[in-house]
Length: 371
Image (tube, rainbow, N blue to C red; front, side, top):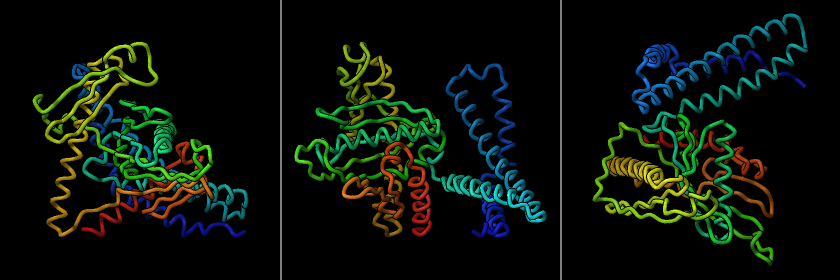
């Protein structure tokens, strides 16, 4: 079997990496890193914990970005040397090693290239995800719990911290809804491609006649608010109810009225949190969720106004977007991008990077064509 055309492949990688370097701009980021390192070294940094957290988080993100692109450039240079030596000496073992390294490097560059497409207003933010069961009864509730596990496993695979704020359990199985946060920079930009209606087709494990069932679950992805967002919510606009938590939990979770439900009266938005131990903690978490929903509502209003000015009726790409078929065949397919795989088990275990990357590329193409 003929090996890869190294000259073409290396030239393509160099071009792609140069484009990435132009976007990430390591030199400019090194200047900002130096400024942040001075702030981190200040003895009074942690006198203001929120500010300190933002500084250290930003420093970690920038260092990671610079290290990544510099590392890939170094790998590309080393690979070019390995190919040159292997070809000069006719060393098949070295060329085979170079072919393996080429494949790995191509995947790494493609992944970083997707990251450079995240340039939206809130793409750098952490993400707040809500999953809701929709049509399909008990199967939909079970499907919603499968999606919850899928996203938590995806975050675990990437070592992204998560925090579940609220879980509303269904009576027989599964969940009615769940809200959780992914605490990683660019989590919103990355996961926003997952927003929409997901559809599951399978033989229902809850049907004693073994009939095929189609069920639906909705995924909502919001950017986490920051102090600079200035979202003022007057107390008079809120109705706050407390109640006893339901579902699995420790002794203080299920035996006191610690759960909090907040209704934003002007919009009718309702949020709740019951997974923290105290009422104050649950109220603070619920307010964060409400702020994120109001932030997204304001963004959608601005986008609708722009679409109206452009004569665009708005986009509907966030509706039904992926099918998970377990019977009569096995396949998971994105209905927008046509990306598909034949291993639903792996997908439900969090292997969704291919879907996310194709969704981000599709969204960027759509945005560019609408300008």
